[in-house]
Length: 246
Image (cartoon, rainbow, N blue to C red; front, top):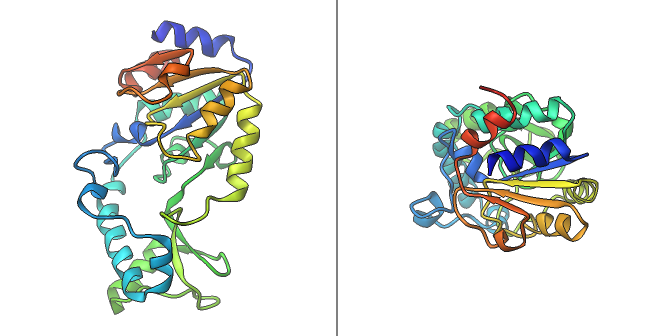
């Protein structure tokens, strides 16, 4: 199977990579949706609740800093580095990701090549004016007062720069992902259950547009039946030889 994937990548004109939580679990970051994951133990906070309640905002930040104890230690794995090499070689035009961990950037992929559908958890933004706030500042304010801090510039609500349940998907990123998907002849979906929409619609769009669809995931997905090639295996171990990392 990996030989087939290697050949498909070599023969492709433009590859788009789509990544989900599965690639980051190999860096030690837990998948919140999996059995035993955080969301099976604690219901995620809805965006509208976050906006309306200072108490809920404080709870959201408490959870965020607890989770970050794990995420902050994570480093890009062989899967991330293999993708970075394919980007550097010009074979992969864009990486569309559902992940919020910044590991694709940390692997060396230029930010302009990465399309983050669910945002980024390594910094915060004001929901009103959009100003960026570093998490170190948010943590200091929160630990000092026990309250969720307001924006330094406009007094608006500060939130982790991620897309929460009930929050609108980012229009610019969705448009960029749509354009990138239509421009590829090989769409490689990696480490995603392909159950979360609208993000999971991109592999379908690529297939309908005539691109080859390849799915690399440890477990079966709902889109396996329409894919041209399906590989159920470890991500790093599969991609590293293809990118000639080892």
